[in-house]
Length: 198
Image (cartoon, rainbow, N blue to C red; front, side, top):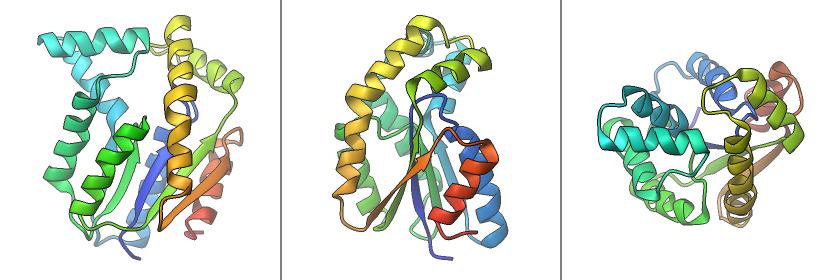
């Protein structure tokens, strides 16, 4: 199995984290000798906010509570440090939580070039807003208030959907548009088919 870069895109509540965990297990079984670098910035931001010790951690927590996008420099630090610590050109790379804007996609492009990674798969979990609203309310996370959910959906529409257009014209890139309303098992099966891992 060749080293693979897979970017997950979808609104919050579309199940990206769950699907990355499932895919991680499959790749581990199929290619046990190759490292898998799993970078999920949302989880990293929540871990920082939970500490609530420094000014930055408290401010990150406030932004999570309101649903605002975290500033680019913080996002770049989080995934950039993870790449520096773990990534090489032979690893598999699973990404969730960035790029959330076209500007972030350009910065990620520099990183992919630096780590000599050409081919990119983009898993687009296409999920209607009414479905993700329901899912976010049901998961009952502290930062899933009605206002924060609406704020996140707005920046997803305005800032993240254009990222898909960016990847549709990027060379050596495969955008897989999947049905995000399927069951967890169904979405997982779609991903395996798209990546030819079934």
